[in-house]
Each structure stands twice: as structure tokens, then as C-alpha cells.
Image 1 (cartoon, rainbow, N blue to C red):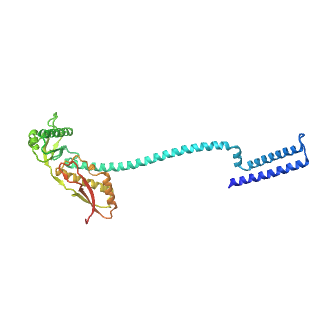
Image 2 (cartoon, rainbow, N blue to C red; image 1 turned 90 degrees about the vertical axis):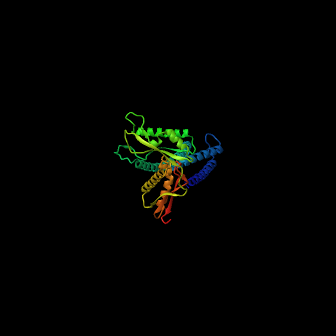
Length: 350
């Protein structure tokens, strides 16, 4: 609106200046004045031009005095154009910088989400390992102040013996198991004597490895072979061990409920997580007692953190207590090295 007013004012003043110049020229022409010896006609033209210049200059001067915009247009236009070009260049740079910052922000947000997921996974793994430690302590039956380093029934090594295997190959398996268990026993402090490099004492029935291997090679079906501790053992004493063979058989059928507990949405999430870890620990103990070779499977490998988190969400969203079941995801046999399981939630009335 201000620009339109300024344009109209300049146009109006221009018209007035033209009119005044014309009037002055006419009066000078009528009086037939002469300057510098020129003819009146030319004198009139010079006076008209000079008068127009003076009036126009005066008009611009007055406008410049009154309006800062006119002063800027007259005296600072070039510098303003240069500043505008510079400002546009700075704007482009800032836009590029903003785009880079947005990309960095997006990357950081994605990293934050990934770290939160990883943190949750690690928390679940820590709980699983805590349950695993409890399982090992229960199997070992060892207190903090006890000198017992191995407990009766503790599993030292496990192998699967295939059906109709070559006796030499089976003997190699036995020797590997003995070597592994012997190193473990030495590391914990078992010894046949003070300076001995041997710690194991094999039970009479399996002390003759070639004979025992020949007997296993005659089996018509695969089986799980374990080397287990036969009695509690203290530090710096021999470790008595024996082989135990479990012929293969199905332990759990697909869809069979392997373990279950009642859970409530009122329980805290940490409490529910601990109970799920306890359920997994108990299930693994059951599988071991049934002869399955699953001792190398960590609790965190039985269920992923995502599966546990999904079940916890379902429990917290429920309106009443539910039955949490661990179900076999496939037929599970003794020779299987991993428990394939699923979590299911059901109402208490079925």
C-alpha cells in the first residue's frame, strides 16, 4: 500500500513540474527575454529546461528528506542488491545445513530406537542368564562357603551317538568327551594327585573305552551319551565320573503343554519376566532329566526378547488372570540339542 502511494505521489509531482515548467517557458517567451545574447526562443527553452531540472531536483530532495525508502532507492540500491545476493547464498547454505541436520537427527532417532530395542534384549538376556546361573547352582548344589566343586549328577560333556556307528568313531567321541571333562575338572581344582595332570576317575563299567565303544556301536537307534559326575567332589580330590547312555525317544509331542503358570495383569513387568525365566529354567531341568541333550542351549535362545515382550504386553492388556503355557512347537526327541517352544495365553476357564 505504501509503494502505491509513493508512485502516485511521484506521478502527481511530475505532472505539476511539467505544468510549472510549461508556464514558466510561456511567460519567458512572451517577455522575449534574452540570455547570453541568444534569441528569445532559445532563451525560453533554456529557462524551461533549467526550471524543470530545479523543480525535479527539489522534488526528489524533498522526497528523500521525507521518505527513508526514497533515500534507500537513490543511494543504497546497489549495495542492497549485493546484500540480497549474499543473503540468498547464505540462505542456500543454511538450507543445506538444515537438510544435513535433519538427516543426522533422523539417524540419531533411528539409533536411539535401535539402542532401546538392544537394551531391552540385553535386559531379557541378563534375566535369562540369571536363571541359567540358578539352574547351575541347583544342579551343583554348591553354597558360597562349600569346598564342593562338582556335585553328583552334574553333566560334564554330551555327544549324540548315531545308529550303527563305527566303533572307532564312537571311541573317538568317548576320548574327546573325557579330554574335555578332564580339562574342566583341572580348571576347577580336581586332581588325582597333587602334581597330576589327570583329574578323572572313570567308573568300572566304562573305564575300558574300546569295549564300551564297541557296545555302543551295536545300538540300532541313535542316542544321547553323557559323561556325568557320580559323587560330590571337593577341591584337590579325584573326580569320579561315568558314562550314561539314553536311547533316542520322543519326549514331547507337537502342541503338548510342557509347563504352565497363572499370570495376572496386576503383576509388575519385572515380576512377570522373572516368572517366565523361572518357567523356562524348570522346563530345561525337566528336559535334562528326560535325557535330552539341551544343556548347551541358553534360556535366551529358547525365547527371543521380542517374543517375551509381546507376551508381556498381552498380559498387561488383559482384564483378568490368564494361564501362560509353554507348548512344544515340534516333536522333541532326546537327540535334539534345542527346545523348540512357543508361548500361549489362555483364560483360566479354557
